[in-house]
Amino acid sequence: MTERIVIVGGGTGGSVLANDLADRLGPELDAGDVEVTLINDGPDHVYKPVWLYVPFGKREPADGRRALDELVDDAVDLRIDRVSEIDTDSQTLRFDGTAPSMEYDRLVLATGSTLEPEQIPGLVEGGHDYYSESGATDLREELLAFTEGEIVLSVIGTPHMCPAAPLEFVFMIDDWFRERGLREDVEVTYTYPIQRVHGNPHIAEWARPIMEERDIAVETFFNAESVDPDAETITSMEGTELDYDLLVSIPPHGGVDLIEEAGLGDDGWVDVDKHTLEAEAADNVYALGDTADTGVPNAGSVAHYQAGVVGQRLASEIRGRPATATYDGKTLCFIETGMDSASFVEFDYENPPSPAPPSEKLHWSKLAYNEAYWLTARGLL
Ligand SMILES: Cc1cc2nc3c(=O)[nH]c(=O)nc-3n(C[C@H](O)[C@H](O)[C@H](O)COP(=O)(O)OP(=O)(O)OC[C@H]3O[C@@H](n4cnc5c(N)ncnc54)[C@H](O)[C@@H]3O)c2cc1C
Image (cartoon, rainbow, N blue to C red):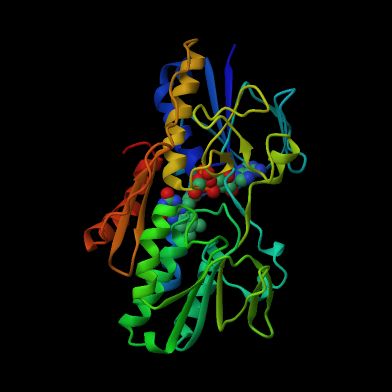
């Protein structure tokens, strides 16, 4: 009987896994013993890290898009459809509209994060972001026209994608205005919900003095409650009100609704064993990337490493061997510290991060990694 492996989500984790399985299970796929189907709700694969550079005019949104059918191995069945329901008892997926349902033997959820700006009254009307393609494109127009005033970058709610990206944005903003001789006329304020400037204490301890040196004002314990787009103010639950001329937010994030509806976890994040990535509430279900609630950052590097683990485990299971591969929490991240310098961190469940001294070489390494991404997504690097 053919084993049907179905992956939902053709972003970083899902695409890397699909190509990994095509490679690992080549003989079984050729013999028809296994089928791998990748389902995505659009025809394109989107590489989100490009959006950080769009507001500064350094990249185009199109640089972060490639057709999935060019990126994914031909041995994988690609289905462009939106999964609307997961029934883990009958091992069935249902779709929007009239599309027929699909049964699976093994399911992998890689549905990523969803932005939920509507959670904060006034944020949709008053705020900008670079966490979506349209947001980054609109913000570019605002930034290019901005020559003086107050910019507030507010991190609203965690977890969010790429915990380093808010720090990168304020470091880049600072440098970008300095290079153009406008920094004296632009005030930059960074807000964070807890008592430090980043969720990870080691990264927070490293970043705070850089912010002080660069004259970036900091408001910690700032949990945004509402935005008044007419008065141009953002107010926190703690009672602090900040004026802004340009508000850039990291909006609240959630997973996709169907996860909670399937009883797999709260807020769209799948409860998993953080080493095996198996769902806790259902058999034959794995989750990886942002949607897997492992406690590590929501980052593409994490999705990539986890895809390798799930690929090895699935191949072992298909071949009737014990699945021994486990995820150790490995995360790596380049952190831009300006327009032409960056730091780097690498850590796991056991070993905390220790940011490398910023250098131009690390900045170029980050840019090179972004270019090489299209090869890593194909499983070639
Ligand atoms: C501005 C920015 C900068 C970033 N920079 C970095 C960085 O430098 N380094 C780094 O490691 N990470 C970075 N990230 C984070 C990284 O992009 C994400 O963590 C990564 O994309 C997560 O991969 P994923 O596979 O879990 O989800 P995604 O890549 O988001 O893919 C999820 C896919 O599932 C699809 N989908 C969702 N629901 C359904 C459904 N019901 N049916 C069918 N398909 C569905 C979506 O359309 C999407 O294609 C950044 C993110 C942003 C926003």
